[in-house]
Image (spheres, rainbow, N blue to C red):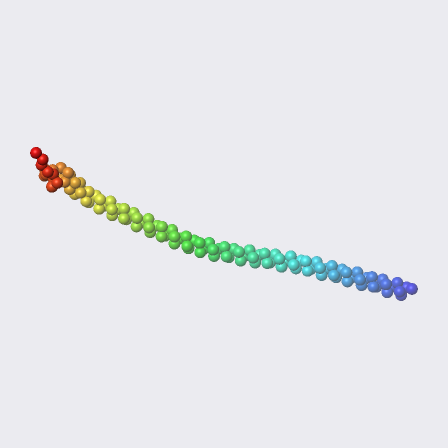
Length: 118
């Protein structure tokens, strides 16, 4: 009887050790899964930051070229305005004199369609 109880006792101890090993394996698996998830999240964050940085560089390049175009257009517009103001100032006096001479120099003439009726 003692050998039977001793055998049962050994079986129970073996079952307990197997159960402990199984629990330990489950804990290691859960720990490894958490670790893998954290590593994946870190990798995703790093990739996201890299892509965001690339996007910002492309955006800055495109917007920078647009602002350069805007600046060039602004400069060209200011040059054209200066050119037109210079032309205006140069020819203003002669145009005013021409208008005054046309308006003030009245030459009385009879219109071609005028008919004298007596």
